[in-house]
Image 1 (spheres, helix red, strand yellow):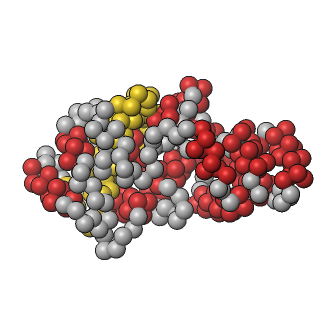
Image 2 (spheres, helix red, strand yellow):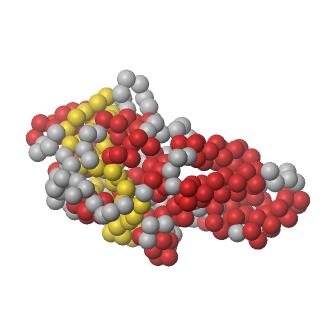
Length: 322
């Protein structure tokens, strides 16, 4: 048997001025059909009453709640880095302070993780307003994460999708604690969920549960958010991108991933290497947009954009942005 029954699930929860919604999230942890083995909470120097909410919850909790207050502000990614490192269970589930979990979230994802070769699993999330009223779509719909792409992930080919774009939301992600040896430390510049998902997709099988197991609350202080943006808002934002700086940062980030995972599956690492070649090729395109057109056309014909980029969005970036 891969895990004890029931499996020991550590919940890594990060907080920062989360008092407005934290109690509802903690309450949803306490009614899971598979209760956490422990909850690790790392607070990034909140100035509201987050600490007292956690302390009150810990006093009546059925499971251990360990609260750690950072000595200085780390930011979201480094805070999750710390929380993950403090977990002692066999399975780690990431949690945001303002969501609400479906009662069977840990049970379903823990069961999926017990399958042979599976090292991480993620689910969909229902997007709601700040009162938890559904906005009429899920995060997978928001991301246009298609049925075809979902089938690729389900069949053990998550890396094929992640080489193009990020579809894994951290608050829906559960992974084997042994994966920490490759995950930590999380390099600067990476969002923790994108980094962990990519590492998992190379180190083993990252699979999915197509149920919306999290209520993803939208409010004024969301770090990223899941609201649908009008096309022209997205287009205006894209025009502000510094193309050279963007590609340089992408090359740096993917080079870090390649270096961290260098000794793993040669077949899967070939995808990381090919992604880097594609990025470096785009970074070397001529500065003149008119001359650059022919370089872009050649990369379209070679299939580079379709395999390693957002395709038309990335093509537009290379054609239109200086």
